[in-house]
Image (tube, rainbow, N blue to C red; front, top):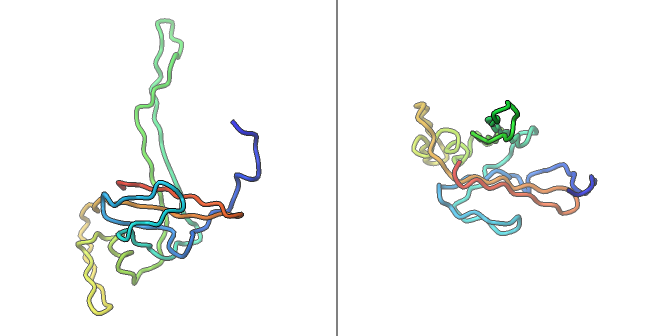
Amino acid sequence: MAAPSVSTIANAKPVVAGGVLRGPLQTPLPTDASTSFDADMKRLGHVSEDGLAPEGERSTNAVRDWGGDVIAQLQTEHSSRFTFTLYGVFDTDVLKAAFGDDNVDTVGGKSTVIEDGAELPHGAWAFDMRGDGGKKTRICIPDG
């Protein structure tokens, strides 16, 4: 493990207004921080000042030997979640991300949204961030 260094610290900001992207499931995602995104990935505009909040959980199960000593901690579950607030309430792509593609209809700049409580379809997601000194980070989720 490398020694602590301020070179690993940055205040991550979206690369441009639209650091959150969403596309259909199975949309090809870049494997580095500089390759362009597929045209099917749509930038979802401004995100609140709280930014991206990654959360995760890992559950383990202690394995004990005959004497009662813990000899292993085996991971039994894992979950990841990313929360953020999008501000583009009049953006069709943002509405589709929030309510589902089939529940949003936009004609002549006017959108109709149906909130039916149906489970949202899976899709590809990406979070595109930059930091001080030219640092870049991407988190890509092929099925989220």
